[in-house]
Length: 211
Ligand code: SF4
Image (cartoon, rainbow, N blue to C red; front, side):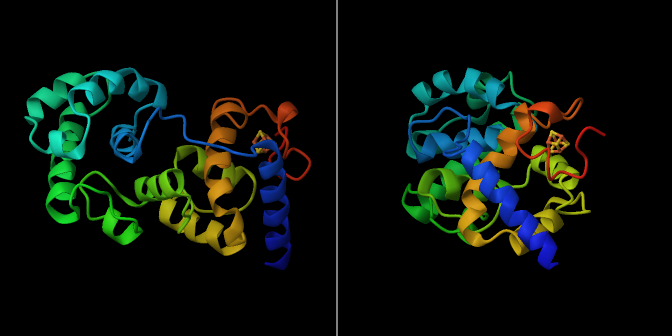
């Protein structure tokens, strides 16, 4: 285990150097727009989400306005994203909850965020880290599942187990950077169909390099 902790620390340092200030690629101007974008991004690319949000935010600029929207109208604005009908419903319900329970302001805790429709643990982690710089956990998406397995940091495929493994081996001070850096690394370097090991900053310590 000690070796794994040392390896994790080395990986964290290398990623921090290569991704000094990693941020979500979801375009947003405030925490409301970030949260809505995060809900929309489930099983959809950030690029697709960024295509629909400008018109959506123009029509529904706040939780308050969104809370009074018709689900069918919201759905029309987000037709290009996967599962848009369910997401439209969750967004309106989320807005109603934020307005009714939190006076129109997102709560700053994982526990409370996860009571809002459409926001599960991964989304709550993203919002906490990107909006307020608070890392209570590590974001585990499809890229992090793949990259952490390739790096030998976990043997699991289940996001909850992977997050637990990563939280155990990475010192807390790295959690925020690791979350975004691993996502970007998986999206652009350790690509699912063909990992670009030649360009990878971790290729000297990755057990899956060039295999
Ligand atoms: S060396 Fe290759 S397999 Fe390992 S993390 Fe880098 S790109 Fe992925």
